[in-house]
Length: 192
Ligand SMILES: [Fe+2]
Ligand SMILES: [Fe+2]
Image 1 (cartoon, rainbow, N blue to C red):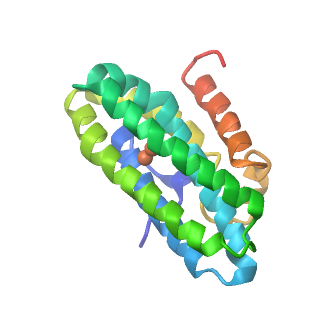
Image 2: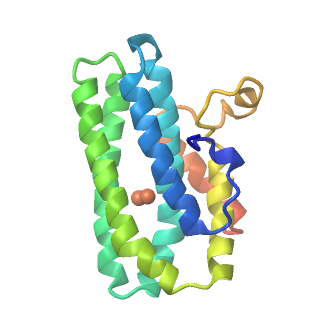
């Protein structure tokens, strides 16, 4: 069974959580690609929500920590942020043009290639070192913020639970990210 419901994930290690989300993101790209035209928009919205949750959690929690914790942290993190920003720009353009735009599918493939290459670079250059340079307790405390963010983005349309969450992440990808950032900062006990 593929695991695509972040709200039911039980990992308590931040790196396990984020790597599981990388798999969920891949699955959601499959769903958008394979969806019939009239369901593509709904699947794309779930992908946008998960990307907003995932990338914002990394930017708020993991990247700042990695800057100090790993060798050459600043360079590694700056490279990842540049990749994330490029993907966000494309995501915003696609969101604005909508799922019926003639270039939606070629853009989706481009976005997928960029997001997946980015995830591989994170796993290779950032997460592996971060695991080696952090304690279990540190990784558990970072996981709390990721879980709070995840709860905002069910990746399946669940009748019942969807109504509780559907108003949380709406609007443009940037608006979603702002909302996720507030939630993470609250969960981590920081002022917005
Ligand atoms: Fe990322
Ligand atoms: Fe990532």
